[in-house]
Length: 110
Image (cartoon, rainbow, N blue to C red; front, top):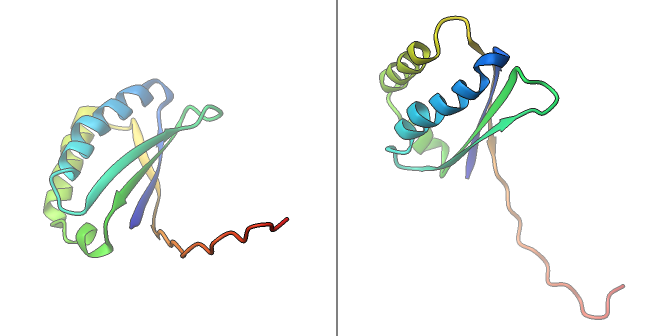
């Protein structure tokens, strides 16, 4: 599994609208592509202008197979719904989730 991690600065008064529009526009669009496993939106209780989205993908190949023009069209719809100057993408990162086999727990171990 891979993670798409995005950090946004959002006008505090637009944060709830950002979260709602993100679900309606971005999550709906991404869910139509193979490899999309789900998405989380994190809001900071200490910083009302910060929103982080975490998208879970099966693989980099599936994530990167989305046509760029499709992503641009979705972003244009989202930007129009939000209005100019209400948000800005600050950081974009990709992570690979690593899982290791667990060793059996020895009985009687302290």
